[in-house]
Image (cartoon, rainbow, N blue to C red):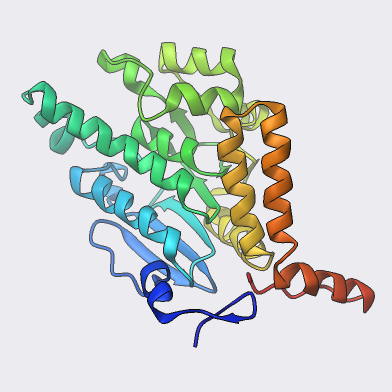
Length: 287
């Protein structure tokens, strides 16, 4: 029977709130999972891995489902070949949008925004491995991830301005300034220019740069490091990082007091103390 914090879990509660996703069969991208690290690979390298209506929807639904996954503790998001993602497919998305009426256009923009919300609300840390082109909606996916590893040859561009659209797409005006600062975000969103890898690292957009041939392996290794940690507590950290954007300092301190008290009830907290007493490294289990 499933266990949680040392207590038997009611089967009905487990059925509604826990599921296994390691064996998920993806349709519009590649999915693999090993040791709790899932890797999503956008897999249209001949066109620099653009998104389609179908891949948007499947990614949204998958990140929503990850909230209940018991066998996935971290996610790596990458692109096949030498590029991350060129954004929405010009022929399969941009062209059809020209002829849609307002209700259908709003349906599309809400769907794309829901993908970002699903990424921010899933408890697993998301690491984006960014090489080559990272443009438009691809740059949004990178922005919505928790950490970003890049290469010196990566080129990140929020291209909406260049196609006659506002930079306020999929949460960019809220998220990007919190990563690189208001002035730098304004520059990228007003001009649509490319942010190179070395500049992106200086700006704090990238956590670090890697050689292209080792990028994915380094992202997966960092994800594995997170999986070896207290994954329940990591999920709480991600939740608080997101929620505290809209809190006063007083509210944040109280929310963190409550969150930390919950973490102190976990077996992982007890394991860490017992390992410290024995002068050993703790082995966390996420409960």
